[in-house]
Length: 214
Image (cartoon, rainbow, N blue to C red; front, side):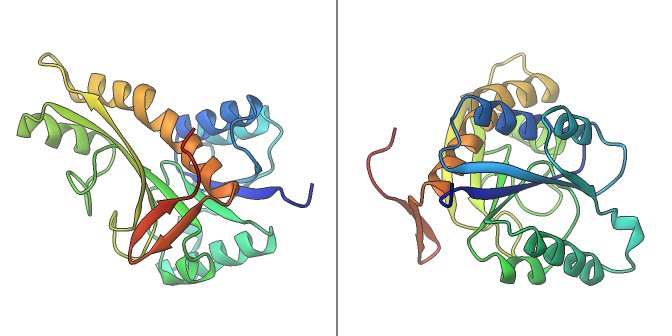
């Protein structure tokens, strides 16, 4: 069991990506990875129920309980470190954190973004705003990206991407749902498995995957 990699999932809402990871783990699709902790940035979110239903330890670190981003980030970094976490996954985590977290977990924080980076990403591009912008631009494909988190928003090395067709009658809501189902819920568990199986290396802001892609 010593090869098991402990995963912490950070959430702020419903936890659909958390559920995708829980389901993938149940199917044996996270490789050496095991979700050992869920941290929510506010109490009462449905993601906490998902964690409880799966028997996963959870904690609430409420942003409103801390005076500054720095105070919150220190508490978060300390909590993750104390739990012996190997990998941190941001799954709809909408709270700003600073370099204290990145420095403790260099190249060990993954985020899923609902667009093909570098399109429709960066400050202000979250939730439905991403899909509204994509439809406004009239793109024919959008998708999702899993990337390593760095201090600059959505600018870290890209691990995996998956394209999804945009339909002429799409609304931001229908596009959001299709990207979740066809891309986010597939490539996030896949990226976590690659990390936990020791197949990801980062050089010059690029991710290289060792071995044959499954």
